[in-house]
Length: 409
Image (cartoon, rainbow, N blue to C red; front, side, top):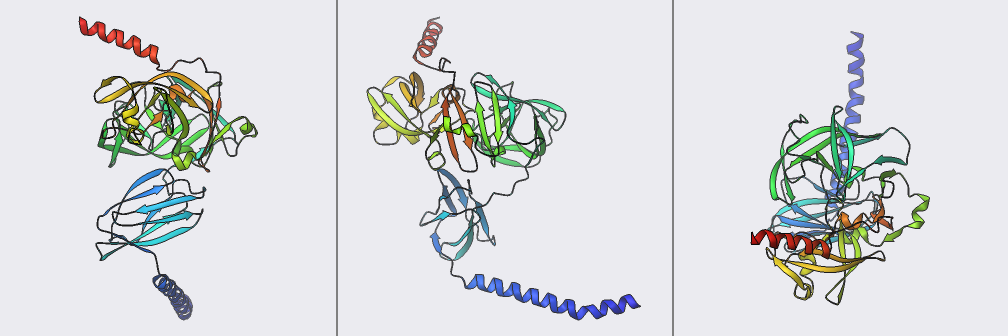
């Protein structure tokens, strides 16, 4: 009986407290409603976000109370632009800040949108057993980087490290032996085109002293038979990583090492989405930006983003045409290091299958690399692999000779 009385005695106090909280919330929402938000207009639900050099497709949905975009490198001050078919709005973002606006769709539907300069929520968590820096040994197969790992505490896996990978992937032919469970699907755009594929959530991956939990794996069919998984730079997004090809060590730091002074910083790496380099072809010099793709087991690739500029497509002199692409011979200068007689393909400006312009790891592995993920900066230093081969004119001539002999049979 005493307990009931005590509870009843507290009721007026609880009610007053709840009323006070409700009043505060009501006033807060009222102030938000009174705050005049920027308004831009759209007649299509398809929009895009330019975050530094990263372009992201965006869908407008007035049914959502608030649609949030988390910026790519939140610690770095940079400009983010939201663009519709009719309008655009830009913000110079600062870490921890939010930028709210309204997109008025077809003149009647309000889409409340927020650009948030914070890390996006993720199911993935990383644990390291020791203090930093820590090393993960790797091997090279062809020109690519591979780790030996353990998946879900029991299955040994061969893991490729690919800076061009936006998600972690599992080889379709490895899924059964790894005994993965799948739940849900997603859309993947890779060398096989745009396809719907399965997702295996909640996996655990161990590489030496590092363990990642809650790791989703997207199933793909464009991997080599000996590859089980592909991981990208995203699993180290809050760390500084070093790729030392001389020692074959992948080193994870929590701050820039003292020997960073021996490296050359590549300005605007994040803003431009790659490294700046020169190529010389047919007596003409081009200065451009090239993607940094350790997952490409080749020298380079020239895409429509390059050939559509100025008269680049017309000026490139081809060795031959192959499937609508020009096979070209050129020299490249990266960080003061010259690479002679590279042979690669160039996609036409109108090629719908053409992918972005990049350097592959046959070239990139001639440099030791430090990638500062929190600040979106990259540093390069020439290493001892200066005599390592890459796909050049001599390689092209040998392949051409074999092809011609096979054709004449």
